[in-house]
Image (cartoon, rainbow, N blue to C red):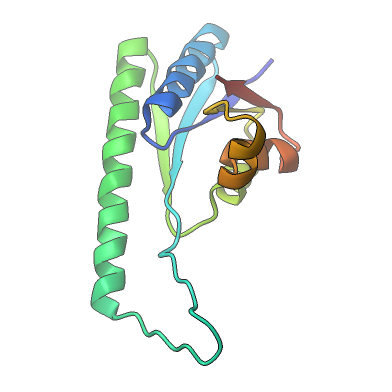
Length: 149
């Protein structure tokens, strides 16, 4: 059915549930599994007309190093979970990207038949105000998405 599954994680407790479910599904199906984590670009907010804020190269390098370190820790934990599940995984970090776009793009580029990700299960106004990367993937992906609550 699914020969290659892309599993998304951000290292949170909620996404860990999705990771474990994705790994178990890949094992049960004998599918290849790729685990992805995405780090977003440095957030820059303009203060208004004529506002000019120049970011130092040092600040940007420090931010990038922190994001890379965080992603490495997340993916190392995912590899450990895969070992405990009894399967091998490929891992990928996509830096400086919009999360939903990167997940969908990597799934397409790698020929994945399924995306597995968790959701915080926010409802109502909280969902509207906070947004949801899972909702973005669901709304924009042509590849099936399994959402783990």
